[in-house]
Image 1 (cartoon, rainbow, N blue to C red):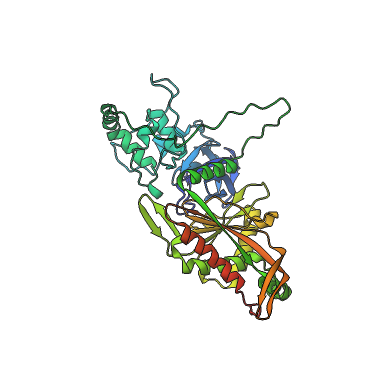
Image 2 (cartoon, helix red, strand yellow):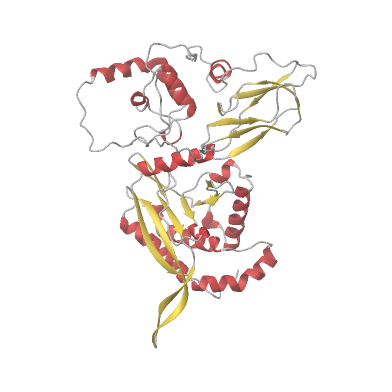
Length: 447
């Protein structure tokens, strides 16, 4: 009997694990080549994974809501039409980690982690998603830590080899194998009382008791991810926001003049978003230190200019697809990228690579009729720009023959930035430069 192992594929540069959200095929059912087999969710995007073989699904190695690592065998398909469904299909995630995880090196001394429900005499340990320094811990790492009795303060001391210093499964398994005891002893020996902080870095959220007629709505997976990411960003980065009002009358008149011909020629609409992104890209070239990330005490200056554009989904959640190398695109190219990513986001057809690698983010609060906003930085970036609604307002117009009052189209730009590395001078000058590019827009420009 020929059996084909279906492994969790690599789904992006920084994606190391995924949650099984739904099996589309049950054991015993026929599966065609490239037929959707399972739905998975990463911290970036939801995906359907197609089958890599044709046959009968005989084994599901992960259950719904369990987390699999990239490279894990998640299912087995038999190419033998008479194959029987395996009786041990209901293996738990912990058993899969020990017995069938192909990502572990073939080392006979590798520790075998056995997770069971019997008490080991220790107090129950719960590990938070983010450590004391804001470092994210994956569900699998937290599960192993809780099972092995590794407390939060000890877990925070483990040196991670993953992206941005994250602790990986390999790191915590190595710790369990050799270093756990020595670290615990060091912690016990150090009995000198630490200086009391002026304020606690994190506070427990209040417990809210619903009234009798209140409706309780459970957060979906994406909303929980957004909530965690936003809280982490505010804890990591001291936010400062600068505001500038820009006169975009030339842009409004120019777009009104060319949008009909553009639609006929290109088959799609030109909105204000790509025009505004073009100005932002120019300003980033003038002030490249807003296009950076922070890693410990190091500043990583990004070579590429990849613009993330926050996009509202029909569910009310938010996702940030990324326009790669936006500085290399013409205005027409930016328009096509903006429209294509927005449509893919609304139709839930974004690929993992579509939402990775952003270096600077734009959010259009004006699309909701808001005049301005104070956006939260999309980590690990250090700045984000909110675009307010374009409004007709009375304004003083200066001419060589005197000043007069006229009707102009204006909008507010709200620039939030990480004050660890972007000072007020840089953050303020950057957003002012964006406004200058918008106000200097050539009304006779060809496209």
